[in-house]
Image (cartoon, rainbow, N blue to C red; front, top):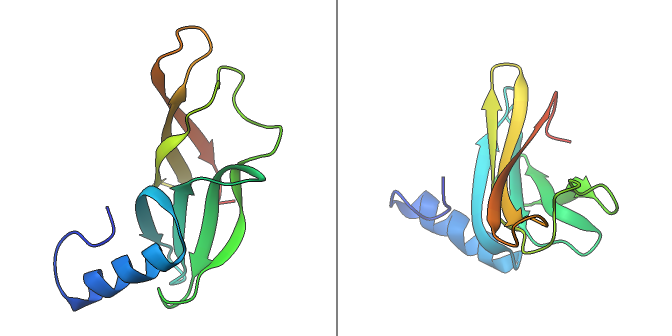
Length: 117
């Protein structure tokens, strides 16, 4: 889901709040069973794909990275872009794109974990 699509005052306000966080690229928001909202975005100075959480879609807390500094995939060679966070069964999945070392072209990657962090 890209913030702001789908219309309505709530979607427009969420899009404004996400712009205020100075996020790069498209942003997806996922709601957990306990009501916590999770978001992953492009960017990050201490890792790749910052993860934020909120309980009200208004106040966001940075809580980590999909790939903390030094833990990028071995094929990664820059240009991180457009991560998507999904819940799939009991797992959390981030689909992302980045430049591959072997081809110097953009490639898709998938990171899987038991939780959003």
